[in-house]
Image (tube, rainbow, N blue to C red; front, side, top):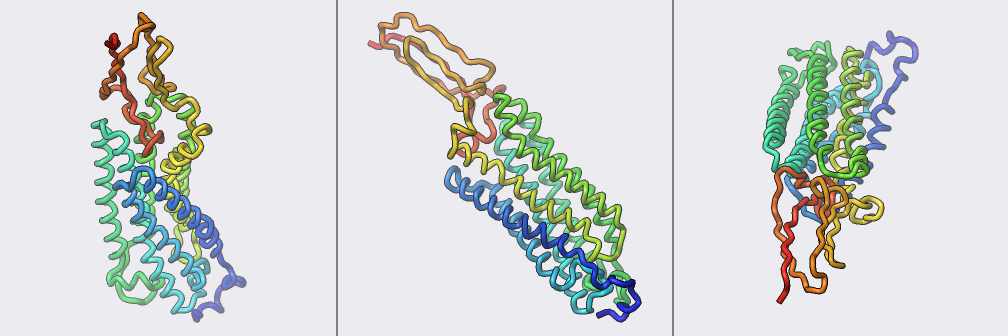
Length: 359
């Protein structure tokens, strides 16, 4: 125990905010892992893993590592005032906290990149969207490398970061609060970009209003993550303290942020699975239907067929009708629709019907 413990205010040594760490980790970690397992099974059985899935695996691994580190830190004093920790516990907690800073960054940026790669796969035929998405991915990668290096080298020598701020250990450190606030600001900005980028394209799809509204939970989680990032930034600004093990407002929002980011990334694939398992509930009238008969021919797509469905009368219903269909890509239509049918993509196509007497 520190020699200064007896000079501290009454009750200071007993105060603890460990529950601010343990409760969200215990609640969110199983939820995140379960949803990822469902997503992985859905992707494996329906389409196989794509690039964004493997990137999200990286995010998951580092998220689990971060959650585990937080849980290990709690019994050693994380959540209590740094002044009341023993030298051994203080060294252990601050060293783990230094490591957590890198793991959290990798998890969060990998999750954002996974979402952007998913967007690119869906809207690959839209040139401007691909350029903006890849530019954002490049920025996130460069930013991740830069901030990870700064986190590792925040003190000179590196091991000074593992000692109490203001200690007599020789060396220099950057201002952690300023660094955290900068990271928080960039996180809010990139969250907004990742959330807003697909919105105009999704809303512009030729989908029934009911289907568009069914996508709201996915984007609702995204909006909540932006809110969490903003709350984290506010907490960092509002609590400029060197008591790293007790002032955990920013840590609380950090835990919520990176865990829910993975939850958000898993929701689209889970919805696809539910569509296949419960088609009457999730598809309704949006399932494409094609039929020919009774002297009529045509096609409907439940609102996702361009702008209208066409039917034409076949003259001479007593004759057999030979019908050929030509699949034609229409760049101006919603060629790909999110969260539909096999593998999560339903292609909207146009049919040219030719009628002729069968000899």
